[in-house]
Image 1 (cartoon, one colour):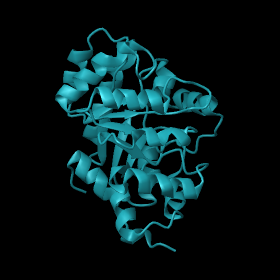
Image 2 (cartoon, rainbow, N blue to C red):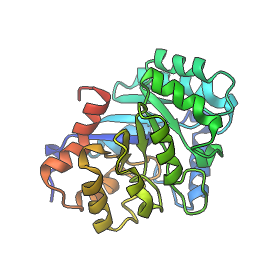
Image 3 (spheres, one colour):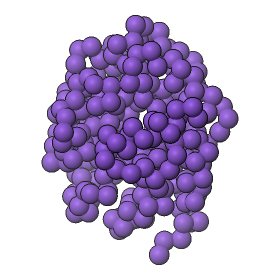
Image 4 (cartoon, rainbow, N blue to C red):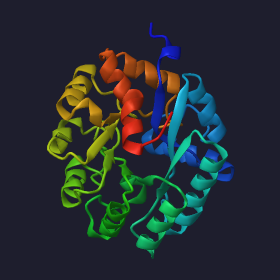
Length: 269
């Protein structure tokens, strides 16, 4: 059994919500995926769950499903990061927002470190030209984008579309969540020659066969992977156990658990 006190751990994919809407937001996510949520979506619940395995830093985010939610969500993420130094915040944008370049600049001025997009929730195709102003602004400002990618029910966030965006914007750091494509892991090899695409481990290892996960880590290179939980969907201890069960060499394991996070975001733990 791995001694958790000997591990340094970061969580590169966690969602938090304002108290007034947390219960509704978490319920909606669970209904969308037909997966019971493990926790409330509050910052305090995140710290409690992550604290059980000693998480040092959390990438926290939320998604605007309507353009009118963008500024309030970005303000909430900034306030949460100010209250909790363990948090590294990603803002949100929406293709329908009226001043994407201006809000992207404000995201950076707020001290947020990137942007989270969920095309399935926001109902746009990743490679739709309507989203290009987001990608152009983030590329110019050096803001990585964490993309939800893949779903067998929809084509909004298909890996092929994600790969097209990464190819069109080579200076944009793209983090393709869920091992690069939830339920579309057969298409993840489309990213092989796209060095600006990173990956996280969230919401994948509960159903992705271990041999396939190990193959993708080897094929894409372990220095492009970040450990993530997709909190509040999953419990931190549960997700860590799934990750450790891959049996990766200690050097590879620790790169994914924390070194790649430190290198990408240039933070101290």
